[in-house]
Amino acid sequence: MSDWRDRLRRLLAEPLVHFLLAGAVVYALLAGRAPDLGERRIVVDRAVAEALVQRFVEAFHRPPDQGEIDGLIRDHVADQVYYREALRLGLDKDDEVVVRRMRRKLEQAAASDAETRTPSDAELQALIDKDPARYAAEPRLSFEQVYLGADNPAIRAQAPALLRQLASGQRVDGVPAPLERVHTGEDSATIAAGFGDEFAVALASQPVGSWHGPVKSGLGLHLVRITARTASAKPVLAKVRQRVENDWRAAAVRDAQARDYARMAKGYDIVIEPGH
Image (cartoon, rainbow, N blue to C red):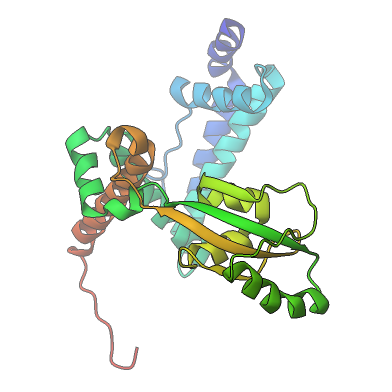
């Protein structure tokens, strides 16, 4: 990495760089105003040049050669000239893309501290206590199922008679399939993995104890009886820390952005005319 730094030091002393900077000054003079120490002055010092080179290294995983460094600096100067001239001419006004991008930059600046801060256990626990259901483990279901086969009108027509047999205590074996008849203590994700999302959703609303169906799965139709539903346990911080911390950080970012916006908005006289 020291090679490109040496080349950069030599480059900053090159007449080419001086010529580029002088060209920017001439451009400013031709634009009708002499350069000053503010917006009309473009400085390519060592910090700027090193940043340009570093971005090149990150993009291409190698240091730039002398010609590439020249090009990086030329592009940087051109970017600055065009950008500042566009601002001077008001080309940023009423440009929704520019407006949105500038808003995002300010929002990101306001959120930066919140994104890096580490919350205390007390703050996370307060979030759990505020909405324990959000962080509680899902209820677990134990159920028995009888597979009837692929979904078709004939099987649907047979389902009521089979349900009556099951309700009277008779055994219905159904169609042989590589499916367990009895399932114990499974959460919705496990049920969905074996039978599909539609089946898992249907089971979530079924009462305990009686046979229901047909219930459709990714394989076909089933008759199902919920034998037990285990209630959710109270959430424990150690088990849900990452979820709670993600929620805390998202809320902290929103709060920081809201405070920053309120601070900035105080400096404006905002008028919303009638009818808008």
